[in-house]
Length: 182
Ligand SMILES: CC(C)(COP(=O)(O)OP(=O)(O)OC[C@H]1O[C@@H](n2cnc3c(N)ncnc32)[C@H](O)[C@@H]1OP(=O)(O)O)[C@@H](O)C(=O)NCCC(=O)NCCS
Image (tube, rainbow, N blue to C red; front, side, top):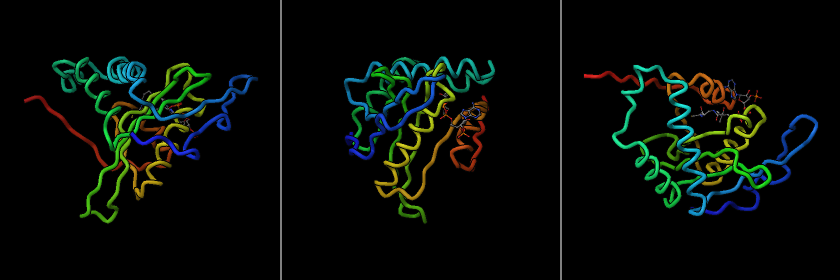
């Protein structure tokens, strides 16, 4: 994992207002030592959040044989990959959200170099204060610096909040995925 350059860090200058008190949210690149916190967010996103949103008939279409093991492998791959990025948002040293991504190159495209957003999550009581956007903007800025001409992200069709948050961030919805049990 590439360390963040100084101007890629969003430090104390990035403040959000919490009631009358202004508290800083800092963004930093996660390392292998952050495995446990990244795995906790990964589980919050792919188990708790999914189960809150998905209709019961959709869950089997998304199921893994060993979801825990798959999430652990995912995090291992994210934190050790050469082309993956994992950013953590921290308030007073306490992790409140994360975002992950990687870069893909396809010379056949007009926009050859694409930054792909994979996972994006902010703890429930921290939402709506700009932390998600700060994570996303920091990841996208890193993609831009790496020469990406386009960014891509995805979410479950039933995740209305994420669809709205992506629209607010300037993304255009371009695909819908269908799945059917045979
Ligand atoms: C999506 C998520 C990361 C956004 O984080 P956040 O800290 O709440 O986002 P922000 O406060 O930075 O909001 C950024 C913008 O998106 C909008 N937005 C965020 N969540 C929204 C929602 N659920 N519905 C409508 N708009 C939303 C905000 O109003 C804000 O708009 P503005 O720029 O006009 O002020 C967070 O809601 C989350 O963790 N959701 C659960 C997990 C999830 O669905 N992740 C996305 C998977 S792809």
